[in-house]
Amino acid sequence: MLGKTANGLYWMFRYIERAENMARLIDAGQRVSLTRSKGADDWDGILQSAGVQEAYFEVYDKLTADNAIDFLLRDRRNPSSVVSCIDSGRQNARMVRTALTRETWEATNECWIDTRALLGAKVKPADLPKAIDVIKHRTALIRGAFHGSMLRNEIYNFAHIGTFIERADNTSRILDVKYYVLLPSVHHVGTSLDNLQWESILRSVSAHRAYGWVHNGEYKPSQIAEFLILDVQLPRSLAYCYEKIVLNLDYLAADYGARVQAHETAHAIRNTLRTQKIKTIMDNGLHEFLEDFVSRNNIVSQQISEGYRFYV
Image (tube, rainbow, N blue to C red; front, side, top):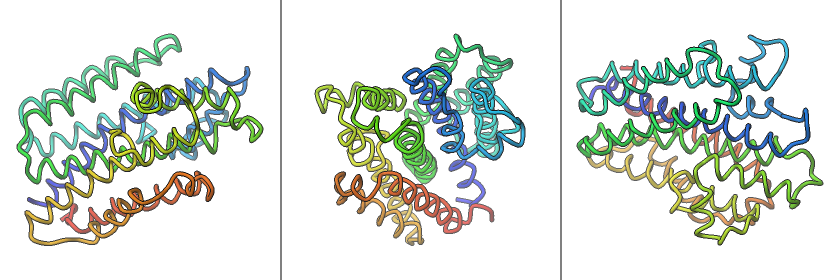
C-alpha cells in the first residue's frame, strides 16, 4: 500500500474518533461542572486536556464556559473542534475513497452533512446534550459501516490503529481532567463530591453501566482508575486500546514481512499495562503516569508515520 493511502486511512479514523472524543470531553466538563459550586466551572482544565488552551486565548481574551464549549464544538480556528475534525476526516476519506466501501463513504458523508447542519449556529446550553448524542451516534455509524463491510486487510489495520491511538489519548486526557484539574481541592478526595465526579467521568466514556457490572456500583477512585487504565474488557481502557494497536501492528508485520520501531514501543507500552498495578500507579502519581502515557502514545504515532512512510 502507498504511504499516502495508509496515511489517509490512519488519519481519517483518528479524526473521526477525535470528533467523538471532543464531544465526550465537553460532556465530561459539563457533567463535572454540575457538581461544582456556582461560578466554579473550570473550563480552563478542559482546554488544557484538549491541548487547545493556547489556541483558545489567541481567539478570546476571557474564559467563559459558553465560549469554551463553542470553541471545542464548532470553531474552525480550532483544528481539534468537532466541526474541524469531521471536515478533516471527510477530506481524508475522499483522498482514499477507492479504498473504502460504499457504506463507509456514505456514512462519513452523511455525518459531515448532519454535523454541518447541527453546528451551523451556536448551540444553546439546553440543546448541548442532544448535540453531543448526535455526534456520538453519527461517528459510531461510520465505525459500524466500516467494520461490517471491509476486508480484514492492511486497510482495516491502519484504520484500526488510528482509532485506538486516538482513543487511548482521549481516555488518558479525560482521566487527567478529573484527577489533576477538575477536583477543587485535595480535601475533597474521597468525599461524595469526589465520587460524583468519578461517576460523571465513567458516563462520559460510556463506561458507567459496565463499571457497575464489574464492581456492583461501588464508586472507588482507585477501582475506577484501574477500570479505565488496566481492564482489557473495557473498549475505552488504555489496556484494551494497546492490545488492539499491537494486534494490528503485528498483522502489518506479518503482511509486509518486516517490523518497524513502532512495534517495539507499542509492545513495551502494552506490557507495562499488562503488568502494572493500580496501587503502584496511584502511589507514584496518577497525573505523572498519564502524562508519561500521552507522551509515549504520541511517540508510537510518530514512529508509525515514519515506519510506514506516510508522506512518501
